[in-house]
Image 1 (cartoon, rainbow, N blue to C red):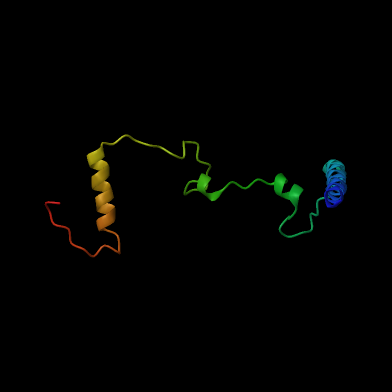
Image 2: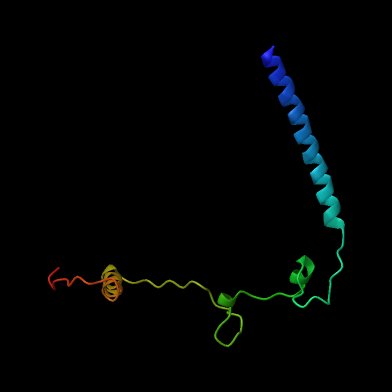
Length: 106
């Protein structure tokens, strides 16, 4: 008897969940078609459509003069293992936490 009660309860919950899902999808589709007036009097121009209207690029995409960068953002050059190791050692030795003197032969 208890199993039948569980099956009935979960069936009712499943129907409620599916009904809510369908209702939310319908409401979202109606909300998407609705046009919202832009409030020009707001000082920051806040709002979804006001933000879409004026595009401001990310600061990392601008050079020092404020112009858009048109070159690749990541440029990798090929170096050999010894040069990379020397650069990493130089960074490690110049770090503020480095206090141990390393012998020259190591």
